[in-house]
Length: 188
Image (cartoon, rainbow, N blue to C red; front, side, top):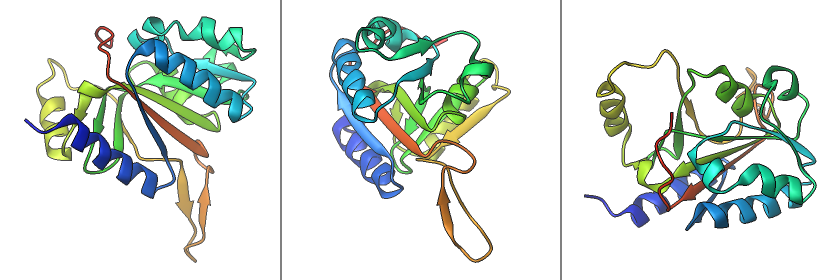
């Protein structure tokens, strides 16, 4: 078995190389306080949030609202394009690539991760896999292969024919991955 600390540092190095941010927090409660501060620092006034085991364990909606950040967890189709951030819990992370895996059968997951200018992706550290090969084996072992699997590596980036790189044209300008060591139940 590979050392989770080594996998985390490999993931962080890869994500930082493509302008993503990466943090590791011990518990869901600590994550909610850390994230509330980070969102305030980024001057986020409102966000969309897809409830998940980690957001519930951290009581994140109440924490964000207590510091003046308005949270929408319904009507995401209308709210996601106009808020400052989206918060989701993703399914796996791939250390060798600095990439996160989203099973987006719930359209709200995709809206919250792709439309706001900042995407905050929560993930349990135990769901960090070493390679793409291991990730594909994990997906293949599911009872049913999902209808949508997204691979997210940092902020949205695109380039034109002259190789001029632009960030945030087709998705978030900022991507923040937060690994939480504490187990918080099963992801739906």
